[in-house]
Length: 603
Ligand code: 649
Image 1 (tube, rainbow, N blue to C red):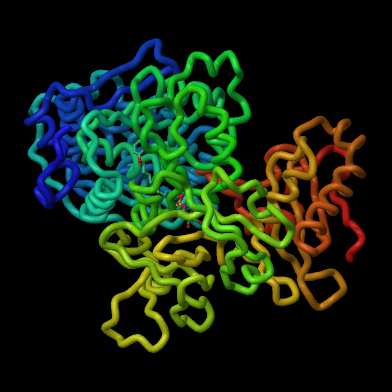
Image 2 (image 1 turned 180 degrees about the vertical axis):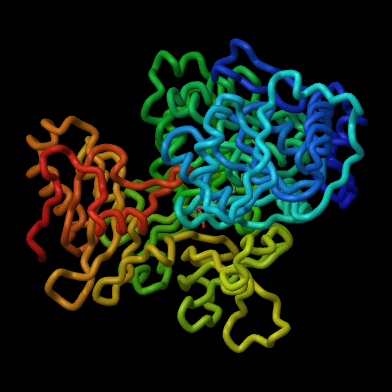
Protein backbone atom coordinates (compact mmCIF):
# COMPACT_ATOMS: atom_id res chain seq x y z
CA UNK A 1 0.00 0.00 0.00
CA UNK A 2 1.13 3.54 -0.53
CA UNK A 3 0.37 6.22 2.04
CA UNK A 4 -0.97 9.48 0.68
CA UNK A 5 0.94 12.68 1.33
CA UNK A 6 -0.98 14.68 3.94
CA UNK A 7 -3.74 16.96 2.61
CA UNK A 8 -2.97 15.92 -0.94
CA UNK A 9 -6.60 15.38 -1.76
CA UNK A 10 -9.80 17.27 -1.24
CA UNK A 11 -12.12 14.29 -1.45
CA UNK A 12 -12.19 10.52 -1.55
CA UNK A 13 -13.13 10.74 -5.23
CA UNK A 14 -9.71 12.31 -5.80
CA UNK A 15 -8.11 9.57 -3.71
CA UNK A 16 -9.76 6.99 -5.96
CA UNK A 17 -8.47 8.78 -9.07
CA UNK A 18 -5.00 8.90 -7.54
CA UNK A 19 -4.98 5.17 -6.77
CA UNK A 20 -6.44 4.23 -10.17
CA UNK A 21 -3.61 6.20 -11.83
CA UNK A 22 -0.70 5.19 -9.60
CA UNK A 23 -1.60 1.61 -8.68
CA UNK A 24 -4.28 0.64 -11.23
CA UNK A 25 -3.79 -3.12 -10.95
CA UNK A 26 -3.74 -3.41 -7.22
CA UNK A 27 -6.65 -5.18 -5.54
CA UNK A 28 -9.06 -2.64 -4.04
CA UNK A 29 -12.13 -4.65 -2.97
CA UNK A 30 -13.00 -8.35 -2.90
CA UNK A 31 -16.61 -9.41 -2.36
CA UNK A 32 -17.62 -12.92 -1.29
CA UNK A 33 -21.09 -13.17 -2.85
CA UNK A 34 -22.14 -16.34 -1.04
CA UNK A 35 -20.28 -15.52 2.16
CA UNK A 36 -17.68 -18.20 1.50
CA UNK A 37 -14.44 -18.28 -0.42
CA UNK A 38 -15.99 -20.07 -3.38
CA UNK A 39 -16.61 -17.32 -5.93
CA UNK A 40 -14.82 -14.16 -4.85
CA UNK A 41 -15.22 -11.11 -7.07
CA UNK A 42 -12.17 -8.84 -7.22
CA UNK A 43 -11.94 -5.26 -8.37
CA UNK A 44 -8.70 -3.38 -8.81
CA UNK A 45 -8.55 0.39 -8.35
CA UNK A 46 -8.83 0.81 -12.11
CA UNK A 47 -11.93 -1.38 -12.29
CA UNK A 48 -13.53 0.48 -9.42
CA UNK A 49 -12.70 3.88 -10.91
CA UNK A 50 -14.09 2.82 -14.31
CA UNK A 51 -17.36 1.63 -12.79
CA UNK A 52 -17.71 4.65 -10.54
CA UNK A 53 -17.05 6.77 -13.62
CA UNK A 54 -19.79 4.92 -15.50
CA UNK A 55 -22.26 5.59 -12.67
CA UNK A 56 -21.29 9.29 -12.72
CA UNK A 57 -21.77 9.41 -16.50
CA UNK A 58 -25.22 7.82 -16.29
CA UNK A 59 -26.29 10.28 -13.63
CA UNK A 60 -24.98 13.24 -15.66
CA UNK A 61 -26.85 12.00 -18.73
CA UNK A 62 -30.04 12.16 -16.72
CA UNK A 63 -29.29 15.67 -15.56
CA UNK A 64 -28.32 14.49 -12.10
CA UNK A 65 -25.34 16.71 -11.42
CA UNK A 66 -26.46 17.93 -8.02
CA UNK A 67 -28.88 17.07 -5.22
CA UNK A 68 -29.46 13.98 -3.15
CA UNK A 69 -29.21 10.51 -4.64
CA UNK A 70 -30.34 7.65 -2.41
CA UNK A 71 -28.00 4.67 -2.62
CA UNK A 72 -30.00 1.56 -1.75
CA UNK A 73 -28.14 -1.21 -3.53
CA UNK A 74 -27.39 -4.53 -1.88
CA UNK A 75 -24.03 -4.94 -0.13
CA UNK A 76 -21.36 -5.65 -2.74
CA UNK A 77 -18.98 -4.07 -5.19
CA UNK A 78 -21.70 -2.28 -7.19
CA UNK A 79 -22.62 -0.50 -3.99
CA UNK A 80 -19.05 0.82 -3.73
CA UNK A 81 -19.10 1.95 -7.38
CA UNK A 82 -22.48 3.65 -6.75
CA UNK A 83 -21.12 5.49 -3.75
CA UNK A 84 -18.12 7.04 -5.49
CA UNK A 85 -20.04 7.51 -8.75
CA UNK A 86 -22.70 9.60 -7.04
CA UNK A 87 -20.10 11.85 -5.45
CA UNK A 88 -18.11 12.11 -8.67
CA UNK A 89 -21.22 13.26 -10.54
CA UNK A 90 -21.60 16.20 -8.14
CA UNK A 91 -24.44 14.70 -6.11
CA UNK A 92 -24.75 13.95 -2.41
CA UNK A 93 -24.96 10.24 -1.57
CA UNK A 94 -27.66 9.10 0.85
CA UNK A 95 -26.97 5.48 1.84
CA UNK A 96 -30.06 3.54 2.87
CA UNK A 97 -31.09 -0.11 3.36
CA UNK A 98 -32.93 -1.43 0.29
CA UNK A 99 -36.75 -1.43 0.76
CA UNK A 100 -37.00 -5.11 1.54
CA UNK A 101 -39.52 -6.13 4.20
CA UNK A 102 -41.95 -4.01 6.16
CA UNK A 103 -39.55 -2.26 8.53
CA UNK A 104 -36.85 -1.50 5.98
CA UNK A 105 -39.49 -0.18 3.58
CA UNK A 106 -40.97 2.12 6.22
CA UNK A 107 -37.49 3.38 7.01
CA UNK A 108 -36.63 3.82 3.31
CA UNK A 109 -39.80 5.85 2.70
CA UNK A 110 -39.19 8.07 5.72
CA UNK A 111 -35.65 8.72 4.48
CA UNK A 112 -37.06 9.69 1.07
CA UNK A 113 -39.58 12.01 2.72
CA UNK A 114 -36.85 13.60 4.80
CA UNK A 115 -34.19 14.18 2.13
CA UNK A 116 -36.39 14.60 -0.97
CA UNK A 117 -33.90 12.93 -3.32
CA UNK A 118 -33.68 13.57 -7.05
CA UNK A 119 -32.94 9.92 -7.71
CA UNK A 120 -32.82 6.51 -6.11
CA UNK A 121 -30.25 3.92 -7.15
CA UNK A 122 -31.56 0.51 -6.17
CA UNK A 123 -31.91 -3.08 -7.28
CA UNK A 124 -34.10 -3.89 -10.33
CA UNK A 125 -36.20 -6.27 -8.22
CA UNK A 126 -37.89 -3.25 -6.65
CA UNK A 127 -39.01 -1.83 -10.01
CA UNK A 128 -42.55 -3.24 -9.79
CA UNK A 129 -43.08 -1.44 -6.47
CA UNK A 130 -42.31 2.10 -7.59
CA UNK A 131 -45.95 3.22 -7.90
CA UNK A 132 -46.68 1.76 -4.51
CA UNK A 133 -43.71 3.64 -3.00
CA UNK A 134 -44.85 6.89 -4.59
CA UNK A 135 -48.33 6.50 -3.13
CA UNK A 136 -46.88 6.20 0.34
CA UNK A 137 -44.65 9.27 0.18
CA UNK A 138 -45.97 12.44 1.74
CA UNK A 139 -47.49 14.74 -0.91
CA UNK A 140 -44.70 17.33 -0.56
CA UNK A 141 -42.01 14.82 -1.49
CA UNK A 142 -41.08 14.90 -5.18
CA UNK A 143 -41.14 11.62 -7.02
CA UNK A 144 -37.48 10.73 -7.57
CA UNK A 145 -36.02 9.24 -10.74
CA UNK A 146 -35.52 5.51 -10.22
CA UNK A 147 -32.32 4.00 -11.50
CA UNK A 148 -32.15 0.22 -11.61
CA UNK A 149 -28.66 -0.78 -12.71
CA UNK A 150 -28.52 -3.82 -14.97
CA UNK A 151 -25.05 -5.35 -15.55
CA UNK A 152 -24.32 -3.13 -18.59
CA UNK A 153 -24.90 -0.05 -16.43
CA UNK A 154 -21.28 -0.25 -15.30
CA UNK A 155 -20.01 0.22 -18.84
CA UNK A 156 -19.61 3.94 -19.54
CA UNK A 157 -22.46 5.24 -21.74
CA UNK A 158 -21.87 6.68 -25.24
CA UNK A 159 -20.19 9.94 -24.27
CA UNK A 160 -17.59 8.25 -22.13
CA UNK A 161 -16.49 9.34 -18.68
CA UNK A 162 -17.50 12.69 -17.24
CA UNK A 163 -15.07 15.01 -15.50
CA UNK A 164 -15.29 14.73 -11.77
CA UNK A 165 -17.29 17.58 -10.22
CA UNK A 166 -17.24 16.94 -6.50
CA UNK A 167 -19.42 19.31 -4.46
CA UNK A 168 -20.54 19.66 -0.86
CA UNK A 169 -22.00 18.02 1.04
CA UNK A 170 -20.54 14.60 0.31
CA UNK A 171 -23.02 12.43 2.09
CA UNK A 172 -26.10 12.33 4.27
CA UNK A 173 -25.77 9.62 6.90
CA UNK A 174 -29.05 8.68 8.54
CA UNK A 175 -28.55 7.88 12.19
CA UNK A 176 -29.83 4.46 13.06
CA UNK A 177 -32.47 5.82 15.44
CA UNK A 178 -36.19 5.35 15.18
CA UNK A 179 -37.90 4.79 11.84
CA UNK A 180 -40.49 7.51 12.26
CA UNK A 181 -38.03 10.29 12.99
CA UNK A 182 -34.98 9.91 10.78
CA UNK A 183 -32.17 12.39 11.31
CA UNK A 184 -29.85 12.94 8.36
CA UNK A 185 -26.33 13.87 9.39
CA UNK A 186 -24.72 16.17 6.83
CA UNK A 187 -21.09 15.19 6.17
CA UNK A 188 -18.61 17.18 4.14
CA UNK A 189 -15.75 15.72 2.12
CA UNK A 190 -13.44 17.13 4.76
CA UNK A 191 -15.37 15.21 7.47
CA UNK A 192 -14.90 11.96 5.55
CA UNK A 193 -11.20 12.61 4.95
CA UNK A 194 -10.65 13.74 8.51
CA UNK A 195 -12.13 10.52 9.86
CA UNK A 196 -9.83 8.49 7.58
CA UNK A 197 -6.74 10.47 8.54
CA UNK A 198 -7.50 10.24 12.23
CA UNK A 199 -8.03 6.48 12.03
CA UNK A 200 -4.89 6.10 9.91
CA UNK A 201 -2.90 7.89 12.59
CA UNK A 202 -4.49 5.79 15.31
CA UNK A 203 -3.86 2.50 13.51
CA UNK A 204 -0.34 3.23 12.36
CA UNK A 205 1.19 2.06 9.12
CA UNK A 206 1.26 -1.60 8.18
CA UNK A 207 2.88 -2.85 4.99
CA UNK A 208 0.69 -5.87 4.32
CA UNK A 209 -2.64 -4.64 5.69
CA UNK A 210 -5.76 -6.48 4.50
CA UNK A 211 -9.18 -5.66 5.95
CA UNK A 212 -12.32 -7.73 6.30
CA UNK A 213 -15.86 -6.51 6.93
CA UNK A 214 -19.37 -7.97 6.98
CA UNK A 215 -20.87 -4.75 8.36
CA UNK A 216 -23.82 -3.18 6.53
CA UNK A 217 -22.42 -0.53 4.16
CA UNK A 218 -25.35 1.79 5.00
CA UNK A 219 -24.09 2.69 8.46
CA UNK A 220 -21.15 4.74 9.63
CA UNK A 221 -19.08 1.81 10.82
CA UNK A 222 -19.36 -0.19 7.58
CA UNK A 223 -19.13 2.83 5.32
CA UNK A 224 -16.75 5.34 6.87
CA UNK A 225 -15.01 2.70 9.03
CA UNK A 226 -14.23 0.10 6.39
CA UNK A 227 -14.97 1.02 2.74
CA UNK A 228 -13.70 4.61 2.85
CA UNK A 229 -10.85 3.81 5.20
CA UNK A 230 -9.57 1.01 2.96
CA UNK A 231 -9.68 3.19 -0.15
CA UNK A 232 -7.94 6.02 1.69
CA UNK A 233 -5.26 3.75 3.11
CA UNK A 234 -4.71 1.90 -0.16
CA UNK A 235 -5.17 -1.61 1.26
CA UNK A 236 -7.63 -4.25 0.06
CA UNK A 237 -10.93 -4.89 1.84
CA UNK A 238 -12.60 -8.29 1.77
CA UNK A 239 -16.37 -7.86 2.15
CA UNK A 240 -19.20 -10.20 2.86
CA UNK A 241 -22.84 -9.46 3.33
CA UNK A 242 -24.18 -8.96 6.89
CA UNK A 243 -26.83 -11.62 6.23
CA UNK A 244 -24.16 -14.20 5.55
CA UNK A 245 -22.40 -13.30 8.77
CA UNK A 246 -25.55 -13.50 10.91
CA UNK A 247 -26.54 -16.83 9.33
CA UNK A 248 -23.16 -18.27 10.19
CA UNK A 249 -20.57 -16.22 12.10
CA UNK A 250 -17.91 -18.81 11.19
CA UNK A 251 -17.79 -17.23 7.72
CA UNK A 252 -16.27 -14.06 9.17
CA UNK A 253 -13.39 -15.87 10.84
CA UNK A 254 -12.96 -18.19 7.85
CA UNK A 255 -12.66 -15.18 5.54
CA UNK A 256 -10.05 -13.73 7.92
CA UNK A 257 -8.17 -17.02 7.75
CA UNK A 258 -8.41 -17.53 3.98
CA UNK A 259 -7.59 -14.00 2.89
CA UNK A 260 -4.73 -13.32 5.31
CA UNK A 261 -6.65 -10.53 6.98
CA UNK A 262 -4.79 -8.28 9.41
CA UNK A 263 -7.58 -5.89 10.47
CA UNK A 264 -11.27 -6.29 11.15
CA UNK A 265 -14.12 -4.84 13.17
CA UNK A 266 -17.47 -5.69 14.75
CA UNK A 267 -19.84 -4.80 17.56
CA UNK A 268 -19.68 -6.70 20.85
CA UNK A 269 -22.48 -9.08 19.87
CA UNK A 270 -20.42 -10.39 16.94
CA UNK A 271 -17.60 -11.45 19.28
CA UNK A 272 -20.17 -13.13 21.51
CA UNK A 273 -21.72 -15.00 18.59
CA UNK A 274 -18.33 -16.29 17.51
CA UNK A 275 -17.21 -17.29 21.00
CA UNK A 276 -20.47 -19.19 21.56
CA UNK A 277 -21.27 -20.75 18.20
CA UNK A 278 -18.07 -21.82 16.52
CA UNK A 279 -17.68 -25.56 16.85
CA UNK A 280 -14.50 -27.39 17.78
CA UNK A 281 -14.38 -28.81 14.27
CA UNK A 282 -14.68 -25.37 12.70
CA UNK A 283 -12.00 -24.11 15.04
CA UNK A 284 -9.47 -26.52 13.56
CA UNK A 285 -9.88 -24.83 10.15
CA UNK A 286 -9.11 -21.33 11.48
CA UNK A 287 -5.87 -19.40 11.67
CA UNK A 288 -6.22 -15.97 13.27
CA UNK A 289 -2.51 -15.41 13.78
CA UNK A 290 -2.23 -12.66 11.18
CA UNK A 291 -4.92 -10.49 12.82
CA UNK A 292 -3.23 -7.53 14.40
CA UNK A 293 -6.11 -5.11 14.94
CA UNK A 294 -9.74 -5.95 15.68
CA UNK A 295 -11.93 -2.99 16.51
CA UNK A 296 -14.93 -3.49 18.78
CA UNK A 297 -17.40 -0.62 19.07
CA UNK A 298 -20.91 0.64 18.46
CA UNK A 299 -22.33 -0.84 21.65
CA UNK A 300 -21.00 -1.35 25.16
CA UNK A 301 -17.86 -3.46 25.08
CA UNK A 302 -18.11 -6.28 27.59
CA UNK A 303 -14.91 -7.37 29.30
CA UNK A 304 -16.40 -10.86 29.63
CA UNK A 305 -17.15 -11.13 25.95
CA UNK A 306 -13.62 -10.04 25.11
CA UNK A 307 -12.24 -12.65 27.50
CA UNK A 308 -14.43 -15.40 26.09
CA UNK A 309 -13.34 -14.51 22.56
CA UNK A 310 -9.67 -14.42 23.53
CA UNK A 311 -9.88 -17.78 25.27
CA UNK A 312 -11.82 -19.48 22.51
CA UNK A 313 -9.49 -18.35 19.73
CA UNK A 314 -6.09 -18.26 21.44
CA UNK A 315 -5.45 -21.86 20.29
CA UNK A 316 -5.71 -20.74 16.64
CA UNK A 317 -3.26 -17.90 17.06
CA UNK A 318 -5.52 -15.05 18.13
CA UNK A 319 -3.51 -12.38 19.93
CA UNK A 320 -5.53 -10.72 22.74
CA UNK A 321 -3.49 -7.57 22.23
CA UNK A 322 -5.15 -7.08 18.86
CA UNK A 323 -8.58 -6.24 20.37
CA UNK A 324 -9.32 -2.52 20.20
CA UNK A 325 -12.38 -1.34 22.12
CA UNK A 326 -13.47 1.92 20.54
CA UNK A 327 -16.17 4.55 20.68
CA UNK A 328 -17.70 6.76 18.04
CA UNK A 329 -20.89 8.01 16.47
CA UNK A 330 -22.19 9.08 13.08
CA UNK A 331 -22.49 12.72 14.25
CA UNK A 332 -18.69 12.72 14.49
CA UNK A 333 -18.47 10.89 11.12
CA UNK A 334 -17.36 7.82 13.07
CA UNK A 335 -14.27 7.50 15.23
CA UNK A 336 -13.86 9.32 18.55
CA UNK A 337 -11.61 7.09 20.63
CA UNK A 338 -9.91 3.71 20.69
CA UNK A 339 -7.37 1.64 22.59
CA UNK A 340 -3.90 3.01 21.89
CA UNK A 341 -1.85 1.08 19.37
CA UNK A 342 0.89 0.64 21.93
CA UNK A 343 -1.26 -1.07 24.58
CA UNK A 344 -0.91 -4.85 24.76
CA UNK A 345 -4.13 -5.51 26.63
CA UNK A 346 -7.58 -4.08 27.08
CA UNK A 347 -7.82 -1.78 30.05
CA UNK A 348 -10.68 -2.40 32.43
CA UNK A 349 -11.48 -0.69 35.70
CA UNK A 350 -13.26 -2.27 38.63
CA UNK A 351 -15.39 0.53 40.01
CA UNK A 352 -17.48 1.06 43.07
CA UNK A 353 -21.10 0.65 42.02
CA UNK A 354 -22.69 3.05 44.46
CA UNK A 355 -20.22 5.79 43.61
CA UNK A 356 -20.80 5.21 39.89
CA UNK A 357 -24.54 5.55 40.36
CA UNK A 358 -23.83 8.93 41.89
CA UNK A 359 -21.61 9.86 38.98
CA UNK A 360 -18.14 9.18 40.32
CA UNK A 361 -15.68 6.56 39.13
CA UNK A 362 -14.03 5.08 42.21
CA UNK A 363 -11.53 2.32 41.60
CA UNK A 364 -11.94 -0.62 43.94
CA UNK A 365 -8.91 -2.45 42.53
CA UNK A 366 -5.80 -1.14 40.94
CA UNK A 367 -5.91 -0.73 37.17
CA UNK A 368 -6.32 -4.18 35.62
CA UNK A 369 -6.41 -5.80 32.24
CA UNK A 370 -9.17 -8.03 30.95
CA UNK A 371 -7.24 -11.23 31.48
CA UNK A 372 -6.99 -10.95 35.24
CA UNK A 373 -10.50 -9.82 36.10
CA UNK A 374 -13.16 -12.35 36.74
CA UNK A 375 -16.43 -10.61 37.27
CA UNK A 376 -19.45 -10.01 35.12
CA UNK A 377 -19.73 -6.63 33.48
CA UNK A 378 -22.43 -4.49 34.84
CA UNK A 379 -22.84 -7.27 37.34
CA UNK A 380 -20.33 -7.99 39.98
CA UNK A 381 -16.86 -9.39 40.37
CA UNK A 382 -17.69 -9.02 43.98
CA UNK A 383 -21.04 -7.46 44.76
CA UNK A 384 -20.81 -3.72 44.79
CA UNK A 385 -18.37 -3.33 41.94
CA UNK A 386 -18.80 -2.81 38.22
CA UNK A 387 -16.28 -3.62 35.55
CA UNK A 388 -15.95 -1.04 32.79
CA UNK A 389 -13.82 -1.41 29.65
CA UNK A 390 -11.82 1.60 28.49
CA UNK A 391 -12.60 2.89 25.00
CA UNK A 392 -9.08 4.24 24.78
CA UNK A 393 -7.51 7.55 23.89
CA UNK A 394 -9.14 10.41 22.02
CA UNK A 395 -8.69 10.68 18.27
CA UNK A 396 -5.92 12.93 17.02
CA UNK A 397 -7.13 16.50 16.52
CA UNK A 398 -10.19 15.94 18.68
CA UNK A 399 -11.13 16.99 22.16
CA UNK A 400 -13.53 15.29 24.54
CA UNK A 401 -15.08 17.15 27.42
CA UNK A 402 -17.17 15.53 30.15
CA UNK A 403 -19.93 17.89 31.14
CA UNK A 404 -22.66 17.89 33.76
CA UNK A 405 -25.70 17.59 31.48
CA UNK A 406 -27.86 19.82 33.69
CA UNK A 407 -25.53 22.64 34.75
CA UNK A 408 -23.27 22.32 31.65
CA UNK A 409 -20.21 22.61 33.89
CA UNK A 410 -17.12 20.71 32.75
CA UNK A 411 -16.25 17.85 35.10
CA UNK A 412 -12.88 16.51 36.14
CA UNK A 413 -11.14 13.15 35.78
CA UNK A 414 -13.23 10.30 37.14
CA UNK A 415 -16.51 12.23 37.22
CA UNK A 416 -19.34 10.93 35.04
CA UNK A 417 -21.19 13.26 32.73
CA UNK A 418 -22.22 13.76 29.14
CA UNK A 419 -19.52 13.16 26.51
CA UNK A 420 -18.96 16.26 24.38
CA UNK A 421 -16.76 16.18 21.27
CA UNK A 422 -14.98 18.86 19.28
CA UNK A 423 -12.91 18.25 16.16
CA UNK A 424 -12.58 18.09 12.40
CA UNK A 425 -14.64 14.92 12.03
CA UNK A 426 -17.69 16.45 13.74
CA UNK A 427 -20.48 16.88 11.18
CA UNK A 428 -22.06 20.12 10.05
CA UNK A 429 -25.45 19.21 11.51
CA UNK A 430 -28.78 17.54 10.76
CA UNK A 431 -30.40 18.01 7.39
CA UNK A 432 -33.19 20.60 7.53
CA UNK A 433 -33.20 20.87 11.32
CA UNK A 434 -31.58 24.12 12.40
CA UNK A 435 -32.84 24.05 15.98
CA UNK A 436 -31.88 20.48 16.68
CA UNK A 437 -28.53 21.17 14.98
CA UNK A 438 -27.85 24.20 17.18
CA UNK A 439 -28.76 22.25 20.32
CA UNK A 440 -26.75 19.16 19.41
CA UNK A 441 -23.75 20.55 17.55
CA UNK A 442 -23.42 24.04 19.00
CA UNK A 443 -22.99 23.35 22.72
CA UNK A 444 -20.74 25.51 24.90
CA UNK A 445 -19.88 24.81 28.52
CA UNK A 446 -21.39 27.08 31.19
CA UNK A 447 -19.49 30.36 31.68
CA UNK A 448 -17.69 29.96 28.34
CA UNK A 449 -17.26 33.04 26.18
CA UNK A 450 -19.50 33.35 23.11
CA UNK A 451 -16.54 32.74 20.85
CA UNK A 452 -15.54 29.59 22.73
CA UNK A 453 -15.33 26.55 20.49
CA UNK A 454 -18.53 24.56 20.16
CA UNK A 455 -19.06 20.90 20.94
CA UNK A 456 -21.21 18.04 19.79
CA UNK A 457 -23.44 16.77 22.60
CA UNK A 458 -23.33 13.00 22.13
CA UNK A 459 -26.09 12.08 24.59
CA UNK A 460 -23.72 9.41 25.91
CA UNK A 461 -22.49 9.27 29.47
CA UNK A 462 -18.96 8.49 30.51
CA UNK A 463 -15.84 9.66 32.25
CA UNK A 464 -12.20 10.28 31.47
CA UNK A 465 -9.49 8.64 33.53
CA UNK A 466 -5.79 9.25 32.80
CA UNK A 467 -6.66 10.38 29.30
CA UNK A 468 -8.83 7.35 28.47
CA UNK A 469 -12.55 7.43 27.81
CA UNK A 470 -14.99 5.09 29.55
CA UNK A 471 -18.54 4.99 28.23
CA UNK A 472 -21.10 4.14 30.89
CA UNK A 473 -24.50 4.67 29.30
CA UNK A 474 -26.90 6.93 27.45
CA UNK A 475 -28.30 10.06 29.00
CA UNK A 476 -31.78 9.67 27.61
CA UNK A 477 -32.07 6.04 28.61
CA UNK A 478 -30.87 6.54 32.17
CA UNK A 479 -33.27 5.22 34.80
CA UNK A 480 -33.32 7.39 37.90
CA UNK A 481 -34.87 5.81 40.98
CA UNK A 482 -34.58 7.36 44.43
CA UNK A 483 -31.69 9.52 43.24
CA UNK A 484 -29.75 6.55 41.90
CA UNK A 485 -28.65 6.46 38.28
CA UNK A 486 -29.32 3.00 36.89
CA UNK A 487 -28.01 2.13 33.47
CA UNK A 488 -30.51 0.06 31.49
CA UNK A 489 -27.67 -1.94 29.91
CA UNK A 490 -26.62 -3.18 33.35
CA UNK A 491 -30.15 -4.24 34.22
CA UNK A 492 -30.60 -5.90 30.83
CA UNK A 493 -27.36 -7.75 31.33
CA UNK A 494 -28.55 -9.16 34.67
CA UNK A 495 -31.87 -10.22 33.17
CA UNK A 496 -30.19 -11.99 30.27
CA UNK A 497 -28.18 -14.09 32.63
CA UNK A 498 -31.28 -15.02 34.63
CA UNK A 499 -32.54 -17.55 32.07
CA UNK A 500 -30.90 -19.17 29.07
CA UNK A 501 -33.94 -18.80 26.80
CA UNK A 502 -34.16 -15.05 27.13
CA UNK A 503 -32.84 -13.29 24.06
CA UNK A 504 -33.12 -9.53 23.99
CA UNK A 505 -34.13 -7.27 26.83
CA UNK A 506 -35.19 -3.63 27.05
CA UNK A 507 -35.23 -1.97 30.47
CA UNK A 508 -36.76 1.48 30.97
CA UNK A 509 -38.59 3.54 33.56
CA UNK A 510 -42.30 4.37 33.80
CA UNK A 511 -44.18 6.24 36.48
CA UNK A 512 -45.19 3.92 39.30
CA UNK A 513 -48.86 2.93 39.13
CA UNK A 514 -49.72 4.25 42.59
CA UNK A 515 -46.69 5.94 44.12
CA UNK A 516 -45.19 9.22 43.02
CA UNK A 517 -41.97 7.74 41.67
CA UNK A 518 -40.62 5.75 38.76
CA UNK A 519 -40.37 2.00 38.45
CA UNK A 520 -38.31 -0.32 36.27
CA UNK A 521 -40.14 -2.01 33.40
CA UNK A 522 -38.67 -4.97 31.52
CA UNK A 523 -39.56 -6.15 28.05
CA UNK A 524 -37.99 -9.48 27.19
CA UNK A 525 -37.89 -11.82 24.24
CA UNK A 526 -38.32 -15.51 24.95
CA UNK A 527 -36.99 -17.92 22.32
CA UNK A 528 -39.50 -20.71 22.56
CA UNK A 529 -43.02 -21.57 21.57
CA UNK A 530 -46.14 -20.11 23.18
CA UNK A 531 -46.67 -23.43 24.91
CA UNK A 532 -43.13 -23.48 26.32
CA UNK A 533 -43.62 -19.94 27.44
CA UNK A 534 -46.88 -20.75 29.23
CA UNK A 535 -45.16 -23.62 31.02
CA UNK A 536 -42.22 -21.50 32.14
CA UNK A 537 -43.81 -18.11 32.65
CA UNK A 538 -43.87 -18.25 36.43
CA UNK A 539 -40.24 -19.38 36.67
CA UNK A 540 -39.15 -16.72 34.18
CA UNK A 541 -40.83 -13.93 36.10
CA UNK A 542 -39.34 -15.10 39.36
CA UNK A 543 -35.84 -15.42 37.97
CA UNK A 544 -35.93 -12.06 36.20
CA UNK A 545 -37.23 -10.32 39.29
CA UNK A 546 -34.64 -11.99 41.50
CA UNK A 547 -31.76 -11.13 39.16
CA UNK A 548 -32.59 -7.42 39.00
CA UNK A 549 -33.35 -7.19 42.69
CA UNK A 550 -30.13 -8.92 43.67
CA UNK A 551 -27.84 -7.09 41.27
CA UNK A 552 -29.36 -3.62 41.45
CA UNK A 553 -31.43 -3.39 44.61
CA UNK A 554 -34.65 -2.49 42.80
CA UNK A 555 -37.56 -4.76 42.07
CA UNK A 556 -38.90 -4.49 38.53
CA UNK A 557 -42.46 -3.17 38.63
CA UNK A 558 -43.71 -4.66 35.38
CA UNK A 559 -42.45 -7.37 33.07
CA UNK A 560 -43.60 -8.11 29.54
CA UNK A 561 -42.33 -11.29 27.92
CA UNK A 562 -43.01 -11.82 24.23
CA UNK A 563 -41.74 -13.68 21.18
CA UNK A 564 -38.66 -12.55 19.19
CA UNK A 565 -39.34 -9.13 17.70
CA UNK A 566 -41.03 -7.66 20.75
CA UNK A 567 -37.91 -5.70 21.74
CA UNK A 568 -37.51 -3.03 19.06
CA UNK A 569 -34.05 -2.70 17.55
CA UNK A 570 -32.27 -0.23 15.28
CA UNK A 571 -31.03 -1.38 11.91
CA UNK A 572 -27.54 -1.52 13.40
CA UNK A 573 -28.66 -3.84 16.20
CA UNK A 574 -29.09 -1.44 19.12
CA UNK A 575 -32.02 -1.71 21.54
CA UNK A 576 -34.54 1.08 20.90
CA UNK A 577 -35.57 1.53 24.51
CA UNK A 578 -37.71 4.60 24.05
CA UNK A 579 -39.60 3.10 21.11
CA UNK A 580 -40.07 -0.17 22.98
CA UNK A 581 -41.38 1.88 25.91
CA UNK A 582 -43.80 3.69 23.62
CA UNK A 583 -44.98 0.41 22.05
CA UNK A 584 -45.45 -0.96 25.57
CA UNK A 585 -47.63 2.02 26.49
CA UNK A 586 -49.55 1.85 23.19
CA UNK A 587 -50.11 -1.87 23.67
CA UNK A 588 -48.50 -2.69 20.32
CA UNK A 589 -45.70 -4.96 21.58
CA UNK A 590 -45.66 -8.48 20.17
CA UNK A 591 -47.17 -11.00 22.55
CA UNK A 592 -47.57 -14.76 22.69
CA UNK A 593 -51.09 -15.95 21.87
CA UNK A 594 -51.64 -16.59 25.58
CA UNK A 595 -51.79 -13.24 27.41
CA UNK A 596 -48.22 -12.58 28.46
CA UNK A 597 -48.40 -9.13 29.93
CA UNK A 598 -47.91 -9.61 33.58
CA UNK A 599 -47.69 -7.22 36.46
CA UNK A 600 -45.57 -8.41 39.32
CA UNK A 601 -46.31 -7.26 42.80
CA UNK A 602 -44.55 -3.95 43.33
CA UNK A 603 -41.81 -3.84 45.89
C1 649 B 1 -19.23 3.39 16.51
C2 649 B 1 -20.22 3.55 15.40
C3 649 B 1 -16.68 3.29 16.69
C4 649 B 1 -21.68 3.72 15.83
C5 649 B 1 -15.14 2.31 14.86
C6 649 B 1 -13.75 2.34 14.25
C7 649 B 1 -11.64 -3.27 8.08
C8 649 B 1 -11.60 -3.59 9.38
C9 649 B 1 -11.45 -2.64 10.36
C10 649 B 1 -11.34 -1.33 10.05
C11 649 B 1 -11.40 -0.99 8.74
C12 649 B 1 -11.57 -1.94 7.76
O1 649 B 1 -22.19 2.92 16.55
C13 649 B 1 -17.92 3.07 15.91
C14 649 B 1 -15.38 3.38 15.86
C15 649 B 1 -13.65 1.33 13.15
C16 649 B 1 -12.28 1.15 12.56
C17 649 B 1 -12.37 0.04 11.58
O2 649 B 1 -11.19 -0.35 11.04
N1 649 B 1 -22.31 4.80 15.35
S1 649 B 1 -23.84 5.17 15.58
O3 649 B 1 -24.01 6.53 15.22
O4 649 B 1 -24.66 4.22 14.91
O5 649 B 1 -24.12 4.99 17.06
C18 649 B 1 -23.44 5.79 17.99
C19 649 B 1 -23.82 5.39 19.40
O6 649 B 1 -23.44 4.04 19.66
C20 649 B 1 -23.07 3.89 21.01
C21 649 B 1 -23.17 5.28 21.64
O7 649 B 1 -24.45 5.40 22.22
C22 649 B 1 -23.07 6.21 20.43
O8 649 B 1 -23.71 7.47 20.61
N2 649 B 1 -21.68 3.41 21.11
C23 649 B 1 -21.16 2.88 22.21
N3 649 B 1 -21.71 2.66 23.43
C24 649 B 1 -20.91 2.09 24.35
N4 649 B 1 -19.64 1.72 24.14
C25 649 B 1 -19.06 1.93 22.93
N5 649 B 1 -17.79 1.57 22.74
C26 649 B 1 -19.82 2.53 21.91
N6 649 B 1 -19.58 2.90 20.64
C27 649 B 1 -20.72 3.44 20.16
